[in-house]
Image 1 (cartoon, rainbow, N blue to C red):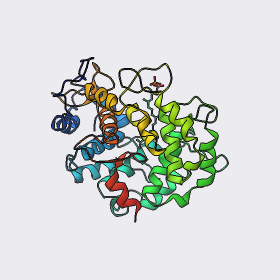
Image 2: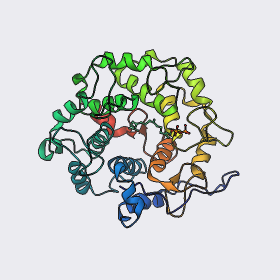
Image 3: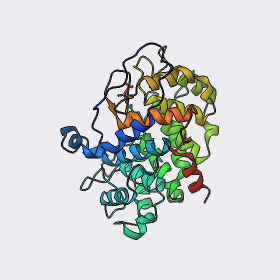
Image 4: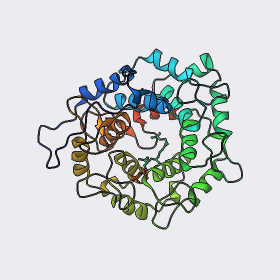
Length: 338
Ligand code: GRG
């Protein structure tokens, strides 16, 4: 799944959304399906380092749009397995180094298409080894997680570990209380969370920290009102959300901010109608895809997070999304109830 941008642009209408402005479901499906056919574009290859994430984004968007069959299942499994290393970890594309973020996407993709058992049947390493690769990235002293063997630490990686290991029912491989203590140490006076202790609050990082606490069953550690207040202040007069103070709105924060609000039961603290209209204004209704803001080029990253945001807002016709996993709720419910 390529991350190549365009061909279209999000709508440029800055005023009220006309009545006829609807979610262009069929064109978004076609747009996502077309992405892997654009191999003669330079950007297709410049974004190879995001390929496996791109498959996760495209697949998730298709499921939420009600088209779970939109990508060929067998070819998807083959591609995912072609990115795996003997360590259990996955790279972004065949031959790329293994990293936490691609390993999480691989697990999420296989879970979404009910193909996790393919790891044991055909993978270069089985399910348990995938869990061990992820667990091996935890610093047992601090509880934090590195992204790969080179050691960069970030709450994104910690959340990724919680996300994938819980889907694999392998959370017991890590020190959950130590990881929870690390997340708690990343909390700031404004109620938000940063990339590491003392770092500035950022909506993306808040999603990862609150998501990890939700998976660990430790949302009691969150100052819900203070965090909810900070998150609700992310909404700008045009309805869109930014990721931190004084920054521009961006459709992807419809996900990072709203999923966090949903996890702490404060989703009603933003104006959902205005945000819905903002997201709809960012679509290219003719060629499909959603952009970060009206007038910019569309891409699959903003497409999935726009659609997932609309799903959180109960937009008619969309499948319900799980605010913790960013996967269809029906799928996470089935897996986690096992
Ligand atoms: C399963 C959905 C899912 C995620 C896996 C990778 C990850 C875990 C989470 C990423 C969380 C995050 C940090 C999102 C923010 C992404 C983003 C738009 C960053 C841009 O940051 P800046 O500082 O942009 O460049 P601003 O908007 O502050 O100017």
